[in-house]
Amino acid sequence: MSFTTRPEIRGTFGAVASTHWLASQTAMAILERGGNAFDAAVAGGFVLQVVEPHLNGPGGEVPIALKPAGGAVEIVCGQGPAPRAATIQAYRDQGLEVVPGTGLLAATVPGAFDAWMLLLRDHGSLPLRDVLEPAIQYARHGYPLVPRIAGTIETVAGLFRDEWPTSAALYLPDNRVPTPGKRFANPTLADTYERLVREAEGQARDRDDVIEAARHVWAEGFVAEAIAAFCRTQEVMDTSGARHAGLLDGDDLAAWRATKEAPVARDYHGWRVHKAGAWSQGPVLLQQLALLEGVDLDRMAPTGAEFVHTVTEAAKLAFADRELFYGDPDFVDVPLETLLSDTYAEVRRKLIGREASRDLRPGDIPGYGGDLNRLLELALAPPPEQALGAFGGGEPTVQDDRPKHGDRQAPGDTCHIDVIDRHGNAVTATPSGGWLQSSPVIPDLGFCLGTRAQMFWLEDGQPASLAPGKRPRTTLSVSLATHADGRVLAIGTPGGDYQDQWTLHAFLRHVHAGHNLQEAIEAPGFKTDHMPSSFYPRRAKLGTLDLESRFPEETFVELGRRGHHIGISDPWSLGRVTAVGTEDGLIKAGANPRGMQGYAVGR
Image (cartoon, rainbow, N blue to C red; front, top):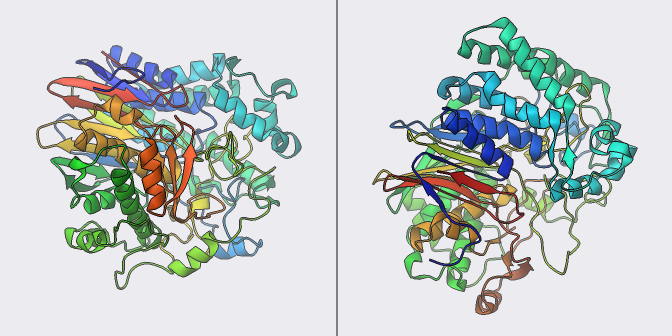
């Protein structure tokens, strides 16, 4: 066993791992009070909205994978669709070639609240008030502000002061960037959730009926009314450098509810890995597993050049397919059966050579896919002058392309939580969207809308083309794996386009190198941007490969020799994986030390 910054947590009662210690401890407290894993995940998820507002919020979305004890894996889709008025022509008429990364034009129907409520109603055991109370308390009375929140606010402080006064009123108290480590509160958000619970309890008594009433209040009551009014009456500065009103209205919110669906799955070395469908990027992880199934990873050192090169080249092939074929299956016929087949993987695997590929090489499946040449034309063009500057950016973590301390940084981030209880229930979720820098705070609610519509293309004929009522092909991705011997593993990470890279890397090191969960999470990270970015302004960086500086020197030398455009990142900068699992009657967990806020707890 190698040194790790913290132990792999092991016990028999339950375990939680998340991207913030307060969410982890909240979820564990729910388990201690007699709640199950699903109650705990909901409570922790709502706390994440409060304590990581730069990475997610009530106006965002969430995919959830769950496995009841003794039951089958299910997926909850908490990704809301585009508004009815969101046509390609509506954006083109405003002079736009891509959907802005910030502001109201990029808003889809907020999906997180209803998805959490669906999980709570069908699988939880505690009343609505009990699971929302921790988030309400943190919003009302405050929580310690992590440095990255303050850093994000500082980056967009000028935008808040000049253009988004409702955000300035909340996030710039006394017209100053709040101090890291100090207590910060959002009493308006506490008011919103307290009113929502109060109105729901006023309409029903039975636990399930109260939850249903809360869903109605959100989608058709005062919350929906405030969202619709804000979109209708406000013109908001966004990344285009112009002000635009929103397209979302009350009918859009009233017409949508979160849904359940069967997962997409693939077997790999005794494990069966379950993912959400092609409305997410989830199947791209399964495609990578299919490609790597025919490779002897057991003989490769997990920090060696052969391992990094092979895994990266497989990722390039899978992500090229993502861009060409994936889209909302309600609108697009996605050839997943072919994409995940052994026959297709065998053909594609032959493209993995000793040299790094500099081309985007999707497969050829007659009758499916879009026009990759047009997407590449957009993805390889110089970014708009205003894309990274005073008007923010599309990524949840505000970044720019200027080097910091001489190193390349990983843009993109969000939140994650995993829970397993003593009964054997397991759940994993990646809440995101509605981060504080995405659009102005709606003053009556204390939160802002998300910007997931930036993941649509404003090009006809693409699987991920914008259409009214269509879900964007989101980056959000959850993984829940079951083993033939009864083991369960719930695992995931923030990271935008890197989610199904970093999760895969930890999983492979766990399976092939025998790392425990904490070792697999802490192993040196790497990633490629060899695909059109899912975030505004949708640019690709073909041939790039960034690695944490903790890799051995010989790994960098050999990868450079193979033709990769190498970037050296800070030693603890790539990845935020968390995981919980079972093994030999024990429950175990690990959490990412990068950023110094993720934590695993259990007993």
